[in-house]
Image (cartoon, rainbow, N blue to C red):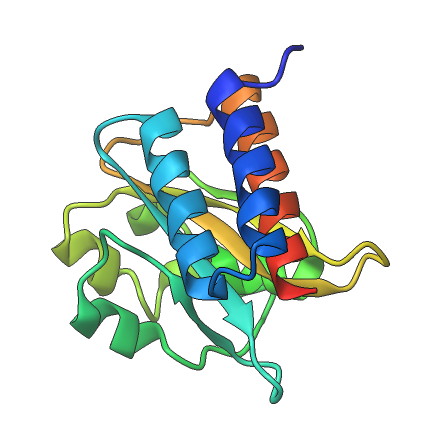
Length: 166
């Protein structure tokens, strides 16, 4: 499969931004907005980073409102919680097709549902050594599995995000 051209271009541009010393937040926002362009209307990207206490914090989530981000701030990675927290805990891609039907969302489902999102998927952001540094999540207004091309694109963008953390 060929990597989505916008993902390849964004990866390369993000690395150039890092070399130029641009702020990490700017790099992550660029990657998040690129992910939203690739996945199309009805999607919102959220990059969460593990802090020094091992809790998830917002790295860049341009389309998500501040009150939502405050509600999910400092989530502890757990395999049985949400999508991004599960991806951070397991180091694996996690798909939630339907928040209302997934028990991992029992505590939190009211949050994305109130914004009109029905599902999400998350790719872990990992260091070159394989350590989880955060997650690259996509919220969806419709229940849909990401295409193989979208998954590959997000994996490439997650690698660029990891570089910004190095």
